[in-house]
View 1 (cartoon, rainbow, N blue to C red):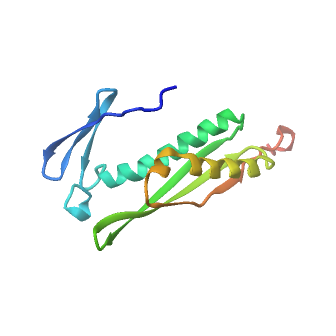
View 2: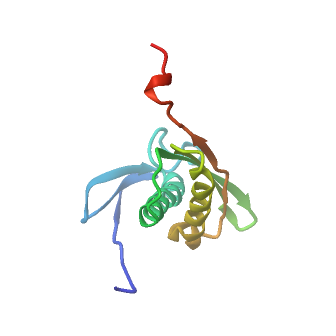
View 3: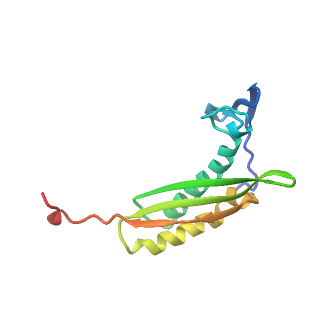
Length: 154
């Protein structure tokens, strides 16, 4: 297995504070702008959104990978992520990212194992380990145990 991987992207300015980012290995480029609070366009992906998205997407793919390796079945996983950007003496900086996963399992006995896997994903997500903002995990695990058909009222 290789010990070094490289990922190349190209960003081009299209107008003040805005542009397009893409990669030869990805079909669809993404339009971006500075956020409106920094005189950018509203309702457009921003570098700040990309930063938070990189953490949360890494977390989701890491959890999914760990679950697959450990033969852990789950009904669904949805993760809300909130990045906090603060102005410090040296300038603006992300100081924290809260991950709020909602993991749904089909059996109550899977809750403890699911919680362990959520924590393991947070610890091993390579993007989260690469940033210096504090990453915090606020998990919710729900059992969506289905009742047998005989108990369902018609």
